[in-house]
Image 1 (cartoon, rainbow, N blue to C red):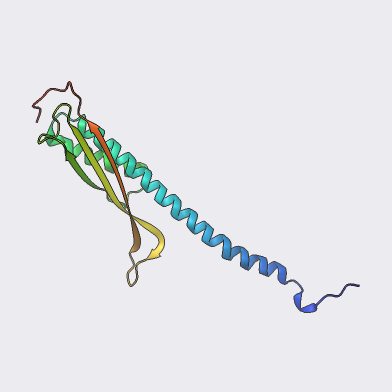
Image 2 (cartoon, rainbow, N blue to C red):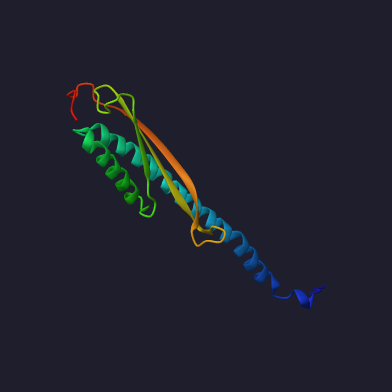
Length: 147
């Protein structure tokens, strides 16, 4: 009662391997890409938040930009994104940024390279922009006129 076709013998394991690889490899790539972008978004959020904190707690306008940049770069380094160079834009609602009661907004933008996807005709990887923003108030009881 057993009718076996000799041509189908042993092909199930090969089919399983081929189909498994065809399904698992793209899933692994998608997971790596999502985790990379997620880490970059977390780093960008932390960079904006810590940059704003460093800015509003600064003692002078001259050191505030340097402290904000340093805090943003440290946030990216903490997340292992040393190849991503964050671009920081600082806006204030007063002429003097550290005016008591004023607000300071920091926007951090970076280009995150997608793994294993080169640009057409180049060895550079395709990048995706990530942007975050944070706004903090300068302490109301801070000494006015600090520069």
